[in-house]
Image 1 (cartoon, rainbow, N blue to C red):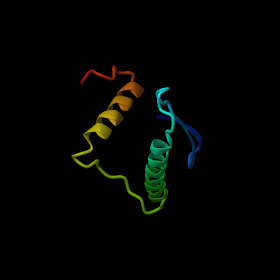
Image 2 (image 1 turned 90 degrees about the horizontal axis):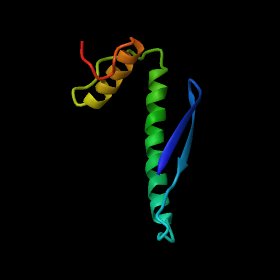
Image 3 (image 1 turned 90 degrees about the vertical axis):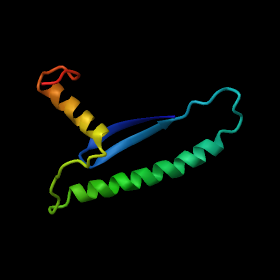
Image 4 (image 1 turned 180 degrees about the horizontal axis):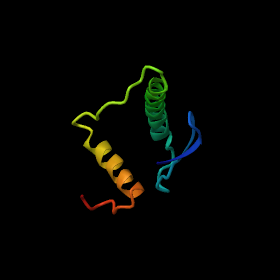
Length: 90
């Protein structure tokens, strides 16, 4: 399964899901049903966070210590914007 996210506006994103099953799978509905429920729950959580971020009371804060993957990603993107190699350290 893959997802393609296409930004439409600051508050809108189109999500396309594509399924890839082995030819031997005759009825993939078990997986489709499971991931449909899971994805809808994830999307509700993301939409809730987006609503919170757009609140006039929102104040950005530091990442939690267990969010090192998010920190690594943000740091890599920032380095690229600054014209530095993504994998080298200052």
